[in-house]
Image (cartoon, rainbow, N blue to C red; front, side):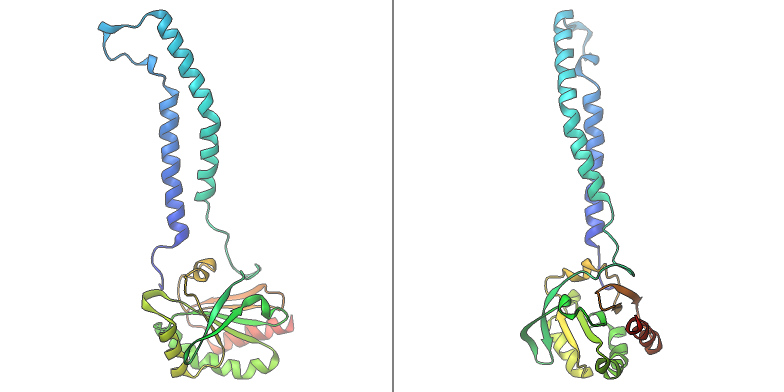
Length: 231
């Protein structure tokens, strides 16, 4: 696994804590204080009890819309994020480009490739499996780029990965496609990346038509590209 605790998991845990607090609040307001006597030697007068009961009930009904609003919010934050998978539009991103000499000063924007089939890879410079598939992906690029396929890698910055280590990766494997650096670690969670490498094949409309996690063979990737090109 290339990442630790996922952001959506942390949000769900926070939501569960919120719901627990709501349950506690409901229990508290459901039992007005006049229903509990701490000492029989200090009994309250009937009129005072009646007034206090009325105040407790008014407080209870006043809290109902607040409790309901918090409950709705708690429900929303505990729901899992929408899945990014086959059939969905690939989320937009714009990232700084890394080349063999480091950051180039340019950016890569996914939507600028609309009208073309895209092979989108998520990788880390320290990932052994990413290193293992790099020569095969470069070979695929050599054959499919002339057919209009765009090749993009989103380079992660987990476990000390950086623009410098990504540049060293590009130089070592002499890969010729575009690398965008996920410097603020926003795109990996956006795509729910759990392991690297992960490959997405996008059609000309930016729709994800194939997804592969882990090492994908040349045959698997070329077959997916052929299907996307055929429409």
